[in-house]
Amino acid sequence: MSDQPAVFTLKQGTLPLLISIPHAGTHIPDDVAATMTPDARFVDDCDWHLERLYGFAQTLGASVLVPSHARYVIDLNRPPDNENLYPGQDTTGLVPVDTFDKAPLYPAGGLPDADEIARRRDLYWRPYHDALAREIARLKDAHGRVLLWEAHSIRSHVPRFFDGRLPDFNFGTSGGVTAAPGLAEALAARAAAHGAYTAVANGRFKGGYITRHYGVPETGVSAVQLELAQITYMDETRPYAYDDAKAAHVVPLLETLVRDALAYR
Image (cartoon, rainbow, N blue to C red; front, side, top):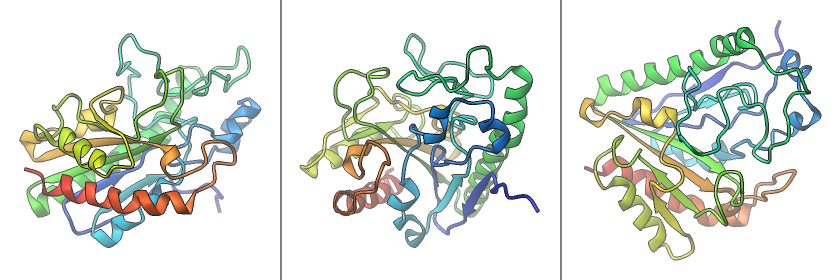
């Protein structure tokens, strides 16, 4: 019997709401890990603890989709052809070759070749996206509409991608294309009104491949990405501990935001 985890877990809900957490995985298969540098084992760029932070989702009635494998294996939020979603800006690819801090993930001369990238795409990327598409279709058939909530988090300081400190709540709808007009702005206003957090709509993080590919409001499928600064709920240095006190403050607001997005017209 294989000791490899399933590629993803899907917990189906009853509301027209699907929460996708594509960067929550931490597993690196032994055959892949053997080709990587020691830095890879820390999976530093994981969206840590989001399944726990969004623990309210199932009680709420949402479907929740979570992968097992780390983004260092393959990035589920990148296009299958590895097109750069942020032209002119530094970013990581479909199969990342370095960390957010630019530490190499592979030794010199050991980067994955085209065949290896295709293999990982078939083994890990496609099953997640097939599940995502099927669940969207199921919910749309049942309700006539679906909200896809893309849950992400990142360290509050990553000079490679942005200057200074990132706002706490970063909502993206690809400039208003993937959801109803004004939704991202309304969510940012709600988060800012809380008083303890900063928020922005369609700033540095406008939504990755999943948001842009699946969010087509005219077909009944809306998508919004939230990139949450990790400083709001955890320790941003190794071993990346969950901070219960911080999380206790942010979770009720997260639930309110998800409810607001679901009700928005």
